[in-house]
Length: 329
Image (cartoon, rainbow, N blue to C red):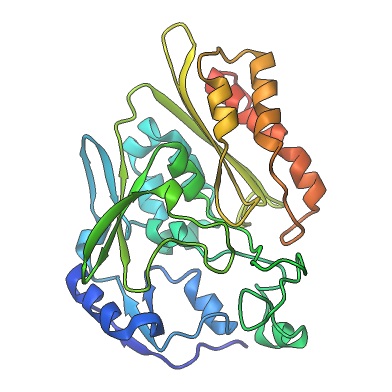
């Protein structure tokens, strides 16, 4: 049985107090929200924080406010998102993404902030300590070689967050708070193309809010490929959002791919191609090809990388057809 290592536990009552602890502890501390990602990682020796800073008692992180758009507290559970009528009606892509994560029990514990900050995954990393030691570890943790691409100088662990692609397609921003102040950045700029150093977030910062603009005229959807229809992480995800005029011509579009690289990929060329066009079969087919062209999945997750590559245009097509109004679910 894998057991948790020893650690110091702190349970602050507000963000200011939590930020102060992080400032004092530095990289030796980790934030604990739902714990569905962090605690298994600690059991496998992938992360060894000396201090856990629980966010459970911070009420402000569980607030959801409607105004100009919607602001989601990072401590809201995934179940909170799934059960919210505003999210389901106006931000359908986010609702679909949250509703497909793991199982009901894990959605009851897992949080929005936790899923956005979800650790990258790899077949050579998500193993027990003894297994990883037998291969002399890997570049992501304790080793010097990326066993997926052995000549690479960067880690190729894959981003497996469901909500991030959906939120990026909706133009989301996030608020990061530290003892030194706060900053708001676009979520698309939050991620780096490096499986080991995958977030633009300092160790002393707390992700407190997700900010979404009004959904006026926007339609969104989320499609997820995985081996089983429940519980599994994505091995490919497609988030798509469009804003079309009354005649059906696309005025703005965003297509985002997940689980094919170390960060969610915003398909700028495909999004630009859709702008000014109606979603005809020919336009959808070409946009799907454009979206898949530069993507190069590697064999670091479930199922074959070449097959996952072939599924990209299939799933982009399904997403765009749904946004057109086709009944394909």
